[in-house]
Length: 251
View (cartoon, rainbow, N blue to C red):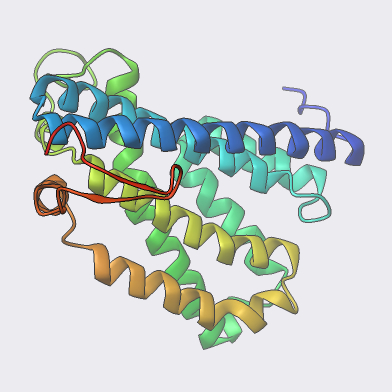
């Protein structure tokens, strides 16, 4: 089978620009959906909350994949053959395998992880985060994309899948946490692919600590904690937009 023609540097740059616009737009959609979800718990609209949470999970996977393609096509980061290899791995084995190969290739530009224990630990830490925030969501995303919003089916579509329980436990506050962890991880990966010899070493520990701190501080966040915050919000607060104090409708 003939191999896919490789992209030129100009094509790589063009894809990066196009995909960057996609990422920005999806980030705007995310902010909009988050406001709507907050309104759902404020209004105690459980049906809308469940439906919009499912859509929020799908949005997270779409945004994550969009950023994945954006990072692949970062100008002067990967050779055209490496980009094609990452895409082929993704098509054959899924998004998590694609991310793993991207990270593996990027680390090969830093040094030999088999001869450097520090690099080996960094490599393992990044892959663990990729698995944590992408693998679980990708499994759920596949079910949602195939219309299995309440009852997930197994691969043969002969019975219910254990994924149903995970879908029942979807929590938009935790999905939003995944968005934010993903962003923090992307900062590290961008340094890795853009500046493997300088920026990655200079910023790694500082950025990793931000990721660790945020992950620890938000691990117990949930819809319940969000609702508690909203219920305890003062009846009156200052509007930055109008510079006036106003009383919300739900108070």
